[in-house]
Image 1: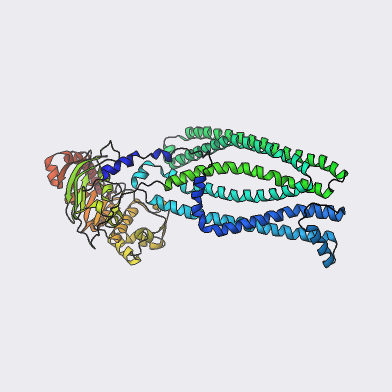
Image 2: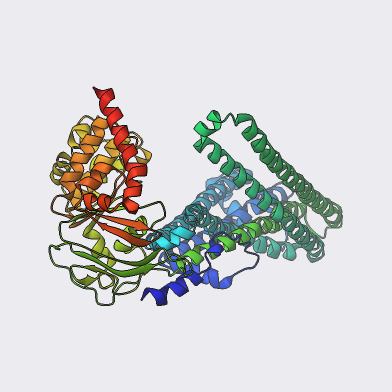
Length: 635
């Protein structure tokens, strides 16, 4: 199976996760696909659309009340205007008559009510829009996270975790900015068309003159955004380099101080910072020029209205209130162009983010599961057979070569060998983190590829050197969310592996919150916690990558005792780093360059004076000497 499957796996282009996607085109197919996550909230989107139309109408009423009603009708007493006032003049006269107040006061009351209504409806529109967008993207983020959780180890071997995290965080945020921006555009263009209709009804020539400014504004905005797009990209890249350099130096601060690299690192950081400053200044200059240009266009438009409209007022072609209404509609005409330019960059960034998100969602690399998996018995015997096992992470590099051996139920097998000999690869294949050929590994006579990986991993307890601790309590890190593991079971497991004493000495015992990666625990305490986690799950097979280096003698004795408890009655594979562990194993397997070189008891292999004897002489005798020194020191 694996030989046929490894070819397409190795043919995959993992480099696309590191490539910079520019998002240079509008991808309608991508937008349609995004609607899948927004569709469940279409009712809320519909309400938001109705609210934005209502808010835009109220926004247009405000200048109408100020210019046509207050200035034109009440102050100037102008009448006979054909300009659509949307009933505001009649409403003012009716309120003044029925409330027995001055028309100016009535107009002020109407203006206040309209303004409050506009503010309320605009807020409601924004909240319904944001709520719908956030819910849809929440579902997309959850689906993406769930999908990434099921990608095999081979995927994460080749793709940087930071790139994957960017898709779940930054790229989803870019889509949020896009969808929110679309709502903003709608809120700008509805008043634009309403205002344009009213302006055409007042004075067609003046409106057409003002419309001539729109292509100029649009062209300037296009070229400005085109110029700044590359600048903003350079700003983001230089800022990313700054953050990466800062993280690298802070993470390696001890090495920096030991090697006296502070000045060298400062000079390097200063160079990147200076580059970032240059890009920021350039972008600020372009922004300033564009801002000055748009302000100038508004001033020119106002001047045109005063010059042309003022003459029309003198000639009684339009009223003063209508001319003032023109000046108040200027922002409604130009704002959509400016906002559209701003949203163009957001759109391109969102297209790139969408491509990256769906690229990850479409990545179909998985561990191949059997169509009809074997049903495992309630308790396994734990017999393991590796039969002519061959495996390579890449097609042209073979890691394991014709590996054949058997582990009897309850037997403890120590695996030793030089770095790169394939010890960890054996463990990964046993846990089915990678695909391999059928008929190469058997568990109780069952082909491992016929067992669903989920069922298999429940029967194998693995403790690696890099023991991972999750945020949460001690109990959470023992149970790992398994409801079958009660607090009593977790405490019993901890007692059996000598972890209960240090846990109860913590401020809140089993409810003590652990810091990131368990930094508030010592190395030995983390190791004991790892044993408690495995024992609580009660697997039939144990894989232990022993990690007792840099641990004090007293803690090491506790760990050695915990290991005996943990391996009792279980088939155990021990990737051995300590002589005592090897001596306590039933047999020792020696790997070199992916091949089984020797297999036998500790004493047998020493007597053979082969590779194991050499490794023992070079490494394990030094370990004995270290233990002897510790014993002398303790005494």
